Image (tube, rainbow, N blue to C red; front, top):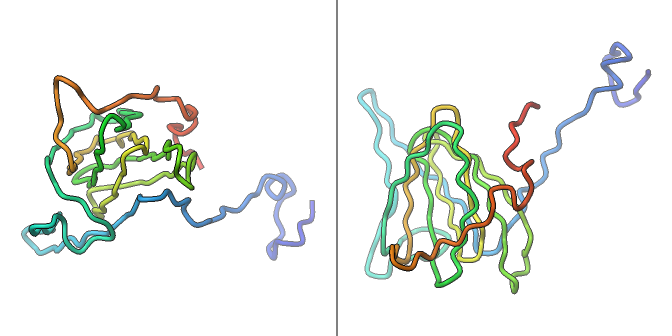
Length: 184
C-alpha cells in the first residue's frame, strides 16, 4: 500500500495500520479551571505553596473559593472512586494531587449550563502539582495510578455526616471506557 502522506516507505501491513495522534484542545466545562503550582526544589527536598488566603478567600487564582474545610484522601493503587456530585447545596472544590497519579474525569451535569454533557479528562500527579476547581453540579471521579495517590482538597462547604451532600452516580454511568487503560 502506498500512502502519499508518508515520506518514508513502509511495509504494507504497517502502512495500513498506521495512525497519527491528534492533539485537540481540551474540552472546556463552565466554571472548571486548572492552575499549575510551582514546586521549588533543592538538594534536600522541595517546598510548594498550595493556597494563599486572605479575608475574602483564596488569592491569585482564576476563580474564587472561600475555604470551609480541607481534607486528604488516600487512594489505593488502581482504585476507581467515581462518580460524586454535589447538588443538595452549593459545594465547590479545589483538588491537588500530592503524590502518585490520578486520572480524573469531570462531566458537566448542570441542566442550565452551556457545557452540559461535556466530559473532560485530566491526569494529575505529585510530580507536577496542579489545582483543578470543580463546581457544584459537575460529576467528578478518579482512578489512582499504580502507586496509588494522595489527594488534598479544599471545599467551600463542610461535610455533614448526618446529611451528606455527596450524591453518587454509578462508576460506569458515562461509559466504562472512561476508565479503560490507555494501551496506545
